[in-house]
Image: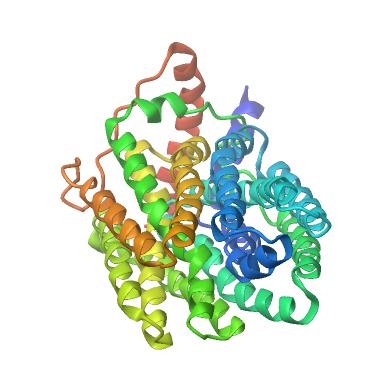
Length: 440
């Protein structure tokens, strides 16, 4: 018995020392690079858009379905990958993502029809993104207590950096080698980066075993359902410029590299927002800043509508949109943690991000068809603005604390779930309380 108590005490001390530790920051590094590679490649699709449409002789609406199916696969599969990470750990998930990215993009480079590209790119890049983002962000949240907001903000900033670098780089590689060879380079290089990330990531301390799924608990929450609907409308408008801003700029006489740079600047602006908003959340309130992100996204579209052929105004548009988009991405995991707690966050985030999957599936293809039918970008821009306004209005009249955070939902667990949770929460609470004591 004495040996058992000493072992338990040592194990508890080890877990306490790991929260907010240098080891925890290695997980942040892994998540930064995994999200940079997977989503940086997905969000660089606009640079490939024209070349693929010309090669396959397809319309804008048909070509945009590639991106729509990819984002749908990515966000909806995040339900599965988040759960797999909760049960088996993040290393397994990253390994799956590496194989999917490399094989999917290499096979896409060999297809002779866009219909096959729907399958190969949608599955390959979609599965990789589902493995490299949502589960990893959930893992980061479990490794931190005091510095959770900053850690999550830095982690998700990888998406912005990836987009900033990979979209202009794709345009240059396409000009030099063609879109097919560029996908081979991105597939093999991206897969290698994900394999390296495996060395840096591990389960959060205090969550060594499988955690129960929280899908039903989240779905029963009326606040969660409103957040999900709001995020769906937000995403429908958000993904329109990701696909079409490059082609819009080209149609206005901007060079291919400069046009691709617009998506890169969008990602770069989001980096500042991800880190800045996450750092300000403790002082200004997570949910207040979350709503501000929706305002910025909404007001950016009139700027695009008035831009015409001015490259400078287009830059202003993507910077404003990027700040709003970055704030949304950085704060979503924190808002959900405030609402439902950190344990089992992978399954909660996976369910929440199905909203973005729906938005990605609907927004770009509908926008493409509107452009094909009207010969103008006005209709999809107005659509994006209107849906953004409704998304913002849905965020009012929610239970918010004086500190500007969502109130924690009471947990409603079955008997089996309650037994599973008791040990997990007892261990986690001990880690966080001991960490607070040692830091004071």
